[in-house]
Image 1: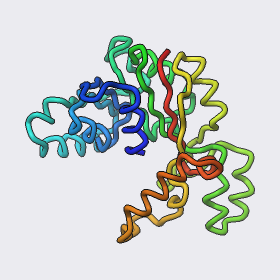
Image 2: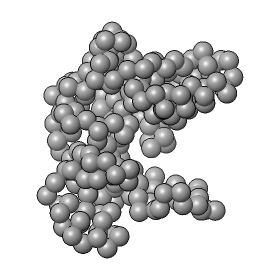
Image 3: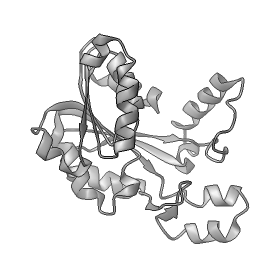
Length: 233
């Protein structure tokens, strides 16, 4: 996903430009820190105290220049208008958040308002059109059968959450003024790997295969996650 995001940033903005980035639901700050290291000015918004602590601990270990380029704000992603003015950012990330939001449309509309003209909105969501893949490949036939007609699922944390369908999100993004520019699949072949599985020796080949599949039909359509990139018109 990081490679996909970098591809979109390089293709949309002048090389060397320091971008204003907002990472909504930044978690432990993996992407936020990566972009700060790349020279961008990054704001991370997160409401989970444990995640904030982890992000601050990681940030504290960075050189001063990187620490100065990143700030962390405690808050709900649905309240971006409370913290920031419209058009304040060139790039807005919202990765792995929508599955926990029962009504995502207001959140998405708020994120689009944060973007300057021509800004990039990057979403990572659970693929509602492929929910039967994981249980099917693991031999859970009743679970696979039930997954065809729903966007609800139970994740690996045991939480009951929701997925999004590409068609629905395409319509939503058009309606909020950040129409879909391109989309990728994420975790096409590796979604069934066990948590904590050892990283294989040929990990670079694995990543190359996933990257290729994530941009190639029909493989990307059955990925566990979808990475959607919208552009503020």
